[in-house]
Length: 172
Image 1 (spheres, rainbow, N blue to C red):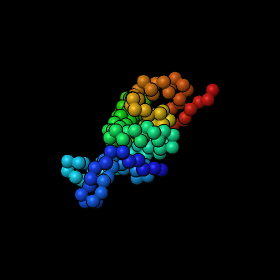
Image 2 (image 1 turned 135 degrees about the vertical axis):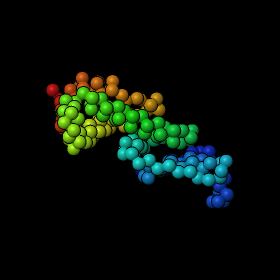
Image 3 (image 1 turned 180 degrees about the horizontal axis):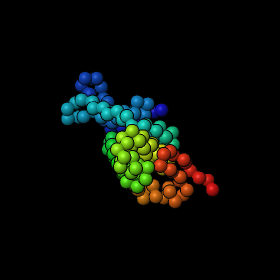
Image 4 (image 1 turned 60 degrees about the horizontal axis):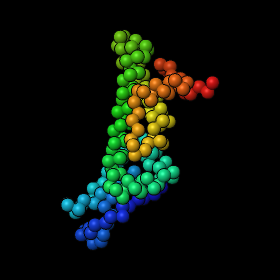
C-alpha cells in the first residue's frame, strides 16, 4: 500500500523543514493535514472496513484519483462523505427490512429481544455485503448514493434473501 503526499508544502517549525499540506497513508488508513494557521499536524484515522477496502482497491486500480484528491486537499472530505453515505445507506436498508420482514415483526410482537437482535445483526451484515458488492469498489468522485433504489435493483437481478439468513446471488 502507498503513501500519498500533496505537492503543496509548508514550513513546519517543529520539524524545521517543509512538509506536505496533506498526506494519505493507505496502510494505516490515516489522513494527515498540516494546518498552516496553527502550525500543527492534524490526523484522522478511519476505522470502517469499507473505507479501508476502498482505499486499498483505489491504491492498486486508480492511484491517480487518490493522488488528485490529496493534491487538491479533498481527500478527508471525500472519505468523510463516503463513510457517512455508506453508513446511512446501511441504516436505511436495515430499517426497511425491519419494517417488512415477517419474522422480525413476529419477534417484535412476541417481545423476543434475542431474535430481534439476531435478525437486526443479520440485516446489517446483509446490507454491508450488498454495499461492498455494489459501492465500495465503484465509488467515484461523483459520490454514488446507495439507497433503497439500488437494493431494489439488486433484488430484481436475482438477489435472494430470506428472513433468517443471507442466501446470496442466484445465477439462473
